[in-house]
Length: 451
Image 1 (tube, rainbow, N blue to C red):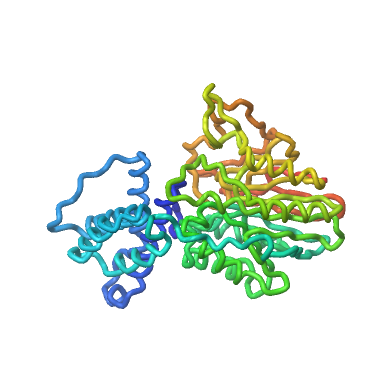
Image 2: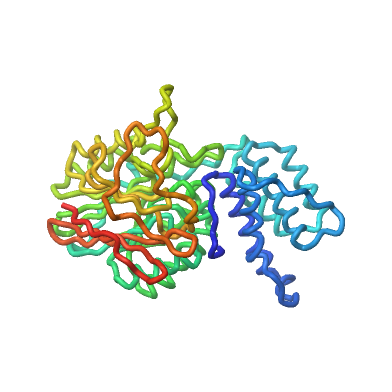
C-alpha cells in the first residue's frame, strides 16, 4: 500500500480498492512483468487510479471524458480496466448476473491483463448470489467460553487504532511503539482497504513480525472495525488464529485481559460486526450482540478491580455524525445502542475508561454521559489533510461533548500527525500517555491517571 493511502467509508469502494491493489500485486509479480525492461509498476499507479474513481463516486471529482477504445495510452488502458472493475464490484454487490456477464465479455475483448478478471472472480466470493455478503464467521460467546487471559501486574500496553495500512506512516508509528517495549500490543480495528486475507498479512501481520516482534513471541490482540468486515471478516478471523499460541490465543472477536494482581482488566468489544453492509453510510448505528454483551457483563461482575473498554466505534463524538437527524433538526452526539450497553456493563462494576478509533483523530474528552474518560485514538496511520478541520463540531448537536483543554493533536506539512497510546499498569492506578509522531519526532500530548 502506498504511503499516501486514501481510504473511504463506503464499503463497496473499499472492496474495489482491495481488488485493484491485489490486481496490481499479481501483475507486478507475474513472469511477463518481470521479463520486461524497467517501467512504472502496477502497484505504483493502479491504487491511485482506484482512489480517483472512488473520489469521483463520492462527488469529490468531476467525471473525466471517457477515452476512446483505439490507441489508448498505458495509463488510459489501466483506467479503463479499473472502471470495468468498479462496474463488476457494483454488479456483484446487487447480484446482477447480466451486468457481471457483460463486464466479463468486455474484459475478454480488451487488452486488460488476465489478472483483472481472475482476481475479480475471486473477490466475488465475498458476495452471495443475491448480493448479500457471505455470512461473517462471528464466534458466539458460548464458543468463546469464560476465557480470561492473564497478563503481568505491571504490564505496559501499546494501543493503536485504524493502523492497518502497511504504509510508511504506519511503520513509523509501530517503530516508535516498539521503542517502549510494551508487554502487549492492542489494535482497535481497521485493516485496509477491506480486510482481505492478503491485506491482513501484508498490512498487519508482516510489519508486526518485522518491526515489532522481531523474532520474539509478544502477545498481540485485535478487535474488528468496519473495514475488517467489508470482505466478510474472512481475513480478520484467519488473523486471530495466527497471532498468539495457546493458552493466550484470542478465541473470538472480543476478549478479556486481566492483571495477575486482579487490579485491572481490559475488555475488547466487537462493534465491527454490524457495520459491514455494502449499502451502509458513515452514520451506521452499530451495536453489540446480546450474548457478547452478557459475556462482558459476566467478566465485570466476577471481577473486583477496574475495567477498561476497547472498541473500534465511538459511543459518542463531537466531530462525526452519529445517527439520523431528528424531526426538530437536532442530532445526538451519542450512539444510543453503545451508551445503553455501557450503562448495562457499568451496573456490574467500575469502568474507568473507554478507548476507541474509527475517526482518524485524537480526541481526549471530558466526562460525558456517564463515561468518565472517553478517548478516541484513531490517528494511527491514515493521512488526513490539514484542510480537513477534524475538530469542527458537528452542526446541530443537541449537546456536544467537550475536549480536555490542550490535548488536540498537531500537524506537519499538509497532514495531521499520527500517534498511539501507552497504558502502564501501576497497582491501583493506570497511567495513560498519548503520543504523536511529527516532523520533530515523538511528542507526548497528555498524561492521564486512570483510577
